[in-house]
Image 1 (cartoon, rainbow, N blue to C red):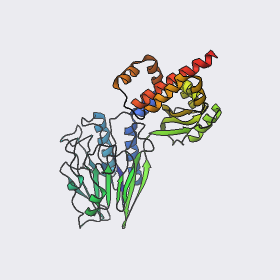
Image 2: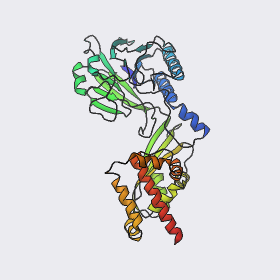
Image 3: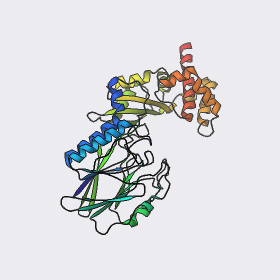
Length: 412
């Protein structure tokens, strides 16, 4: 049996996206999150005595590689070498191939070059594995990836392709080293170790063509557990198991408060939606409210003054393992809207404007004026992260609506 770990997209040197105020301990952990994920990978590899590790590109976050990242990686490779564990690594669009590094890698590290290479690994029992791959010669590498790989070698037990690139059916990423599964299959490989897409994804099961996802999420769009794949080659069978290593996890929590009239109901729902936290794990939460509720105006008012954030954290008894970094009320609707609109035509106009945002382009000057508004800035600061342009204006209208409703309540 051959056993190896498949990981990609470590992005050493990239900071986590978070705007909330953090404790000193949280600041240190978030700063070191990518390195801690790497350390856990190394510890796991040593503990189970894998044959080798495959790293499929974007080891560093930038072409100008941080000295800290290079040092941490070289030290990790040294440790693996002490236990006879090999490393097969490529560079991707974020960290294209360079001829020199600040630190020299030990002999157990095999780096795929920009023209493509094939390395041979032979186990103590004589099982032979060929690994083929390439590193990006430049950041924007758009050549068809399949042209960089030879056909399966006839004198090997297993052949692995290491490919950092964009599958043509996957969207929302730069189309570097594009490929299709139908192009890869005729090469006859037994496993394709992919990189570039930060979400774990299986494109084919026979043979496995798999993105393991990134090793550490860096923003709220990269939610869920992050880590590596533990792959085993036995007989004619290939199996893999995901193993989480990221010490910080982004989570999206959706709260449907339709029909709720009491704060206790909202807090109970939030408590039910909170996922379990592994030992030593921190959670950065993105909480969004949706649905029709009589609490609409109260939720908006408490959101404006920052109290909603504190209420959720205190009501659910969340400790420092949790950071609520983003709150969104854009999916929330006023159950008493019709009555309010009859009483106040101004609110009806605000609601109509909000609905039109989904259909019309927003003039740039309006966005500039909103971003420069001091009152709105204070409101957005309490939400931790600046929203996109549609959400920005939508929340500005929510802010005005809440203020109007609050003033009207005070007047009465």
